[in-house]
Image 1 (tube, one colour):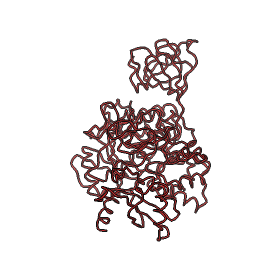
Image 2: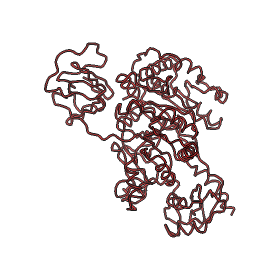
Image 3: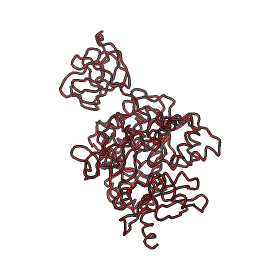
Image 4: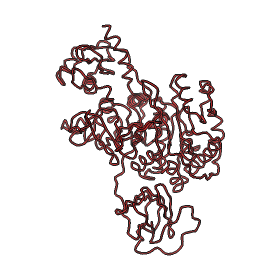
Length: 102
Length: 501
């Protein structure tokens, strides 16, 4: 799984779509709803169940980080599953939005 | 990360949200992207390394910017205010290129090897008119350079500032919330396309999900009328624009109830103007932004709460922050350094240095960034105890009189407190005794300025070495079209006069 900045992914089990903002420092698996995400152009419809341990949802516009690896992901579409990197839940990055300046 | 991604994810998430232009004729995000993809396919087929644009503002511009990112050709907006000779030099530097030109500007362009001219009307008939086309899926392009902007240097040939996709996307993603705008929000863009704020406004609006509306060129009358007609919620202006906008509002009685946020930058805003704006637009949040072309736009900003706090405060240290550009963005590092490179103490003036992913600090074929990533801005400034940044202008503009560094800004501020002063500039002119001497150029409302009283006020508030030794009265001061005082032009004129006198 090549989690390079700008790469787009989608959940295999819900409607969530994701963009990698910062890559992880070491290789690993980005998961949503407890299942590995798939490339955005994968044509298969979401199937299977969301792992109840990873069912807090992805919110559009929010950023999610994995502290240990530095992986940072943007929620580009909302979904019911929540994100994890190698099984470790990712946290919402709390950033105060700045006022528009241009 | 590449700039087209910003539009791509917005168009996927909210395809039918209004994105471009006004009223019924506007494009939603899906057709915005579809049009850009068709332009990109056409640019790729042209096979030119670069894409240049010469013309007035309009919705063709954002479509072209994203299309260039998709096709992998740097976008080069050219300054139509340049003299024909200078303009044609830049056209030649854009080669090999596809150059889209406003029809009435076509006669200005000399035939140039490697440059294919396309009339704006043909471009718009093909790509902007009619029902939105089907989106064309192109392979991801490879070129890392998104935009080349010729800086408006007043000496020597303009430098081509390089803005990479990574710089611009980093700026957008670290300062804007994805789809953070409400569907009813609309931004009015009136800065020209060849200004960094014109470029960044396109990118931040797409990612934020905010509709953009263009003024072909700025006039205060059109600005106020368009704001009212389009229920504009956000806009960015340069200082000279704001004063004229307020005049029109006064004359017409327009109150712009939909307007929520007005940002200003690109030069020092006189305090009386911002005070007037705050009084006239009490429902509007004012933001003062400071940035450079080489930093992908904003690096520091003074927000609405800062404005209110400064105006309401009895503490002079807080009150004066109205004249600051606020605090550096959390996503960048900023330091003030002495000439020897050591850091300045709070309150001590030096050169502003910045570091961060949005900082390109790069010109074509010339990197201007240190190996450790720090970029020297050539701007003079200082930080107060609270970390608020005060910009004193270009380092070159600091007057060095007998070894003492004098900022024109603080002297100009004292002058502006006189009702008779319509405009003013303080400059250093070469002088045998001191190296440089302080002179003032003023525009007087009465035509009979009391320079004795003005000199006395400066002596009392600042000190005698900062008191202008010579006064010049002018009808107007020279500005470029984005509101920057042309100090070097003025200085050259005065140096001749002052020597003669």
